[in-house]
Image (cartoon, rainbow, N blue to C red; front, side, top):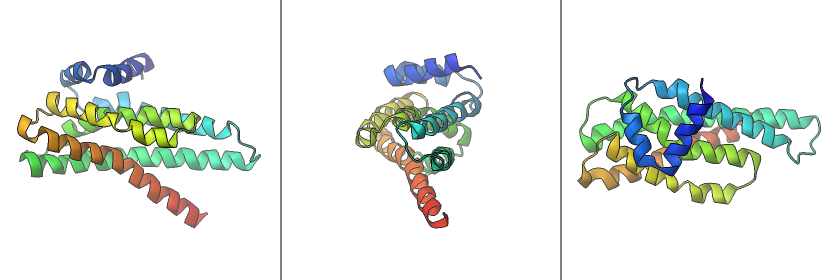
Length: 189
């Protein structure tokens, strides 16, 4: 796992998504996104939340339990949200674009499109930016737009609709799973 390349990819996707998506389109192994991007980013999000829980926390011994619960919540929400979003966008491609199964391509698309979510979760794990977190999620729409245009090669007449639906899926899936996980954690605790 090369973190230098990981950070270069993150910066590239955020600063110039069109160029980054062109580079991503040249990758032959579409499943590479899992081990080279998604899993390390989920790990960094979990680490950030774990460390962030101890910053300013006066809960004493219970802080470790809180940190582990929050770390598990972010891990489960991002991991499950990624696969749920990849499946939903695969179905979107079938219904809206009339395409066959392209699950590996959709996994690649969703993995890199979640870059804004990953970065915001890393930052919000350390600092409290909850309202700003949701406002900045709108940048996901631009990243998804460039990815839909460049990697997914969506026709111009369906591009806006596809981009908006895919963006909602990519933003909502992890949030939905986090809400369910947190609710179950409270009930079962």
